[in-house]
Image 1 (tube, rainbow, N blue to C red):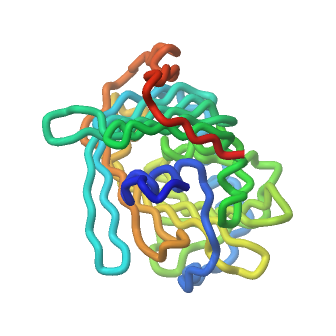
Image 2: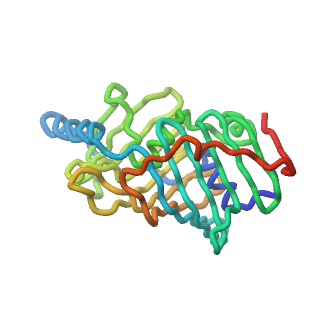
Length: 270
């Protein structure tokens, strides 16, 4: 990545593209197995969550906060999502002028730095060649992660366990890939995901996401308030706060198309 990129935008790019390196020392909380009718009830609630008729697109005002190595940086902007894989992040200055724009189709991305007059273009896969350990997530899974709906198929379910610290929460453990394991902290009564952890074969946590939620809309769909991400290679913490979400937003596809000015310097990542 270019050294001219602002740190906050760089880390947001790394987060969204899921190029995250192992090494976090945090371990999963203790839990105990759940069997029988209680297990069946939990799975029924989990399947109901997947089937809820909730808004798929997101059009939101957001805030980013980065804490790492004693530094504390903040940025504001907009997040726009159109499933299955279209994404746009705009970071603005204090008067609303775009500083950075990141657009991704899930396979490719374009990052625009208006302050430097620079554009970076490449494949999402190519970023992993720079440094880091990929999470083996598909583009549609990354979009679901930002919606708090990253829900593996039940066929990958390995275990259901009671969280020892909080009696109303349970861990659903999935193995969709040989390379890592997905641990979903689920609230059956509220019908929402509280935490999402990906660890590798060595037990190192490579992605740890805590979700905070607003009240339900129409008694149907939980509305995200905040996503807090740790376990990344910078050994810090990124917080994505949803300041304002437009319910039932329809984001047109041309929002995810960028034409760079002719005078911009273009860098391609192979």
